[in-house]
Image (tube, rainbow, N blue to C red):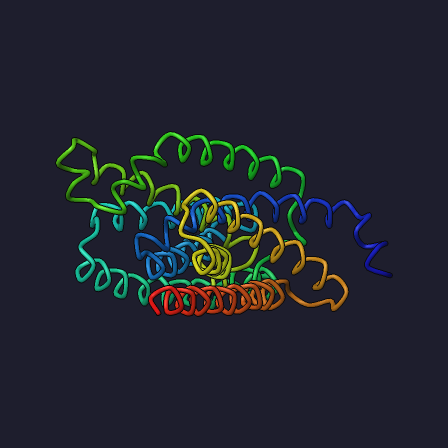
Length: 282
């Protein structure tokens, strides 16, 4: 069956819709994650989402995997958010919980005696298993996340750039950290189901990091991050259909190629500015 024929199938359309929604969420939240230095937090949250999903798979079956991942991700995100911007303490706690979550998830998977594809999907994603109900749930959750993020975005950016001044002006810095951590946890939990726990970073971090190489504008960075994430997800799905392989390596490769290109463009622009400045000074 050709790629064009596969794209006409219901489960492929569901996968594309799910990927589009996840890419929007990841692209909008990613620049804030990068700006706040929370990449390691995303990794830790993904491992706890993996543990929650594996536990739900073991106890309740495949229908509960998404909710298990959501519970695990949100609980650990609340803890990370409560730690605020205390980088040393936060990194230590994340490292402890990350290893614990990974070990717990592996244990749950070892005890599960069902289909191996269900276990494998938690690590590399199960986007071809997304049905209409999953798409509807994803869309509803996505709208809620985007609505809350739209409300807190401006004070959150202020608190991210200069938390001391923001706190002095009455901005609830700690509360905003917790709210954003929960939004991040929800997005990570959704990402674990689609691209898997191992590569959820490639959607939440790489597009945003690529956008940061070519612009300093928060708004433009968000727009570019969404575009980059969409290209990576949709391109990864289409490429995986043709190859008959999981989407994760394709999504990661496309996102990495975008990052390398943006980094090269950013370096070129910096070199040109330096040359122009030298000429003007001369």
